[in-house]
Image (cartoon, rainbow, N blue to C red; front, side, top):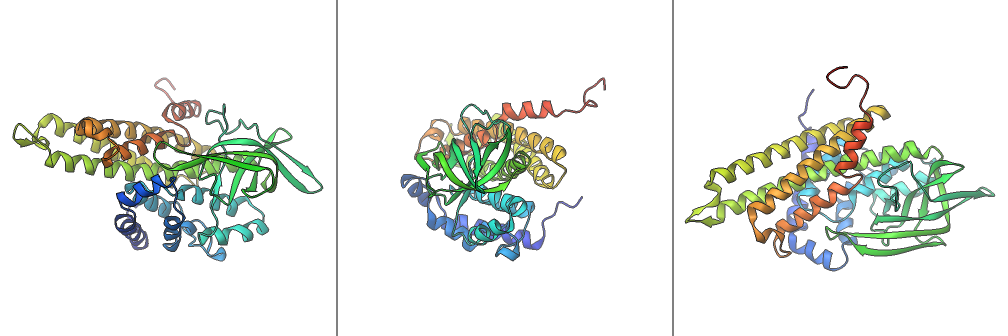
Length: 371
């Protein structure tokens, strides 16, 4: 199997990296956090690069690219711990393009590709504990019109998004709907999250909705798997930069008159961090390559990948803090922000313990020494 990236993919990586390095430095990020954790202007710059249209077909004004290009992009955004929710855009554009009626696609995909409209996934509910088949929100139909009632939690930029992709129960089965934020019956309450980004509680009371698909659970699982693959790739970028920051610090910090990078025990720790980074990178590749596999195979693969990334993120984050010392947990120093991001990514779309349970539940009868 050829793991080399194409020239177009490398050019995409280079373009995103240059924007992150020059247009999204730490000072700008700090200002965005202070302003609420989301910046439309920064999101617009990502749209100008074509990133918001990666998964949108050329017919609807997008770039018509796939999981590998998304992985390359998210790695570079992770290096800059970018706050704006491109993962959500990729999830929702792919979901609409695959499952929504043609009229709904025509109404939203061109605007999403151009960065004019932000659509985010609103699937989390209190008590669901990452289980996608648990959905308390209810939908009902009357005269061909749908309404949705329910509360969704930790919705990315929930008070800023233009619409939500919402799972709701219809006659005991989960369906997917598009609900506009300005629709009657929709209210939001925004708050900051651990990494400095913005989220909200979204409450819907008989909110007008448009049906995406009645086969909602399968579509939701696919959407979350896209989110997991993007999260894994983003985590690789965050870990890569965290390691680089740590090594740079060790090469400048002196103790007993020498750089601490010369201490053998600390060098061994850095080697272990590098090993965990590469384990995470390989599983991120695995996750992206499996997005087009049959559903059962895809779900197993994405759970495995997210579990390994969770292990790697925890190890690298903790070792970075230890190797820096107390400065690593101060808000003024950049390493603390990477540590926060790693912690939040671990809990996104299912934490490590949840994914271990998913891996265990999907083990086949042939698994084990005595199979």
